[in-house]
Structure formats: structure tokens, C-alpha cells
Image (cartoon, rainbow, N blue to C red; front, side, top):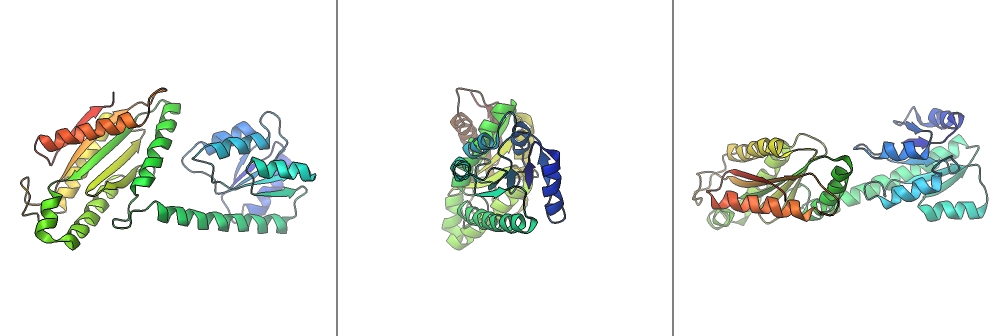
Length: 297
């Protein structure tokens, strides 16, 4: 939870109400609130003052709602304003509720509990929408959203973004020989092996389609990505899933294409996808069960 108010006394009142049951962060300006929200661990809810010097609460709310990474955080305005027009402006800016000062502890607790419950339910529904039903990892829709978000984030920070494209070698022959039920089981085991190799919480493994997977690694350069891709390749081979129909190995293997870029203004994430796809084609055409890599143009 994030408390935002330019008066420390007001923050202390709210802190005493919620500190026992919640992890509470505090900001005394709109600029500081936005900075706290530009990080991996986002608050589940924001209690936001309207009248502040510099960026007021309404503008902070508008900016948070314009950012895909923060637009779903519920914002409750806490203000001394009681005019109906002020309340309307707050709700139009994107707030989910409006509480007048001085706050009643029982009321503010109840309203926060309601909106946290609603957010938890919404997060669960979104998780279901973004999960591949067969493998249990993220699906193509989740990847498509994540790569755009990470591209913008790495561009702002001048940081590298690395992408793997992974293809199970000779998977059609696997299905033809062992049947589709075993093929589904193979996909699940490979997906799990890929996911477990990504140790950082902000890395993403997703099913791209069919027997293809992708891994998105923010703040990771090409060399570090190559090393991690080699680990992915080795982890799949170590599963030792028999594959008598493979012309590459006696067990299931994968080919991996790795690409990395420092996102720039005027270019989009599609150049990273195209580079990783080209590297994957190179890995497959040069013998499979290997990693090929290249920087994005």
C-alpha cells in the first residue's frame, strides 16, 4: 500500500491505521509517488491526497492510469474537499473511491478492504486469461503485452532487453511416434524446464504457439542471455525424454535463437522478435540442439 500526502501528520494517521496489517510505503509529493510506482514491486492500492504542491493528486492519478504497468492499481482519494464537483473530478481522473478528511479509521479500513478484495479477484481473472492452459506458463497474449511494457521500460532506463525463441526439435515426429497425449506431456515438461531456468522474478517464459516458447529477460545483455540460453538448452536435454524419431539426438532437445537490443526511440519491439526468429532459424538450419544469437538491428 502507498500513502501519498504532502503533510507528514496526515501520513502518520493513515500509517497507524494500516501498518499492523499491511506493508506501507509513503510519499510526500506527486513526483515521489510516481517514482515509487516505477519499480518491480507495485503497490496493491494507493491512498492519494488531492491538493499537493507540484503535481497534484488528480494529475498523479491520470499519469498512473495512462501507464499500462500501473493503470490497474486502485486509487482512493483522501482529501479535505467535500464538494460534489471535486468528487466527480477525482472519479473521472480514475479514482475508485473518495474519502473525506479527517478520516474515520473504521470507514477507511472497510473501504480499503473492499477495494483490495476486488483487486485480488481482478488479478486472479487476469492471471487465468494470461496462462496457457496446457503448460501452465504464460501464453502468447501475456508475452505480447510484456514485451511492449519491457521495451518501454528498458528504453527509459537505457538498459538491454534480451529475447529467446525456443523450438522443440522434430516435434511433429515425436507426436507421430508417441501420440498427442505424450506430446502434450512433453510440452508440459519442456515448459517447466524452461521456466525453472529463469531465476529472476521479472523474467518471463511463455508459450509462443505449438511447440515454440519464448523467454523475455529485461536488463540482460547478449552475452548473459547466451549463457542462460545454453542452460535452457542443457536443462531440456537433461530431462532425457526419449525421442526415437529425432534425427538430432536420442532424447528431446531444443533449438534456441537469442537476440538482444538496447531499445531506442523510433524503433519497436518487433526488431527484437525478428532478430530472435532469425537466430532460431540459424540454430535449426545448422544442426539443431544448439543456441545461435545475434544483436537486434
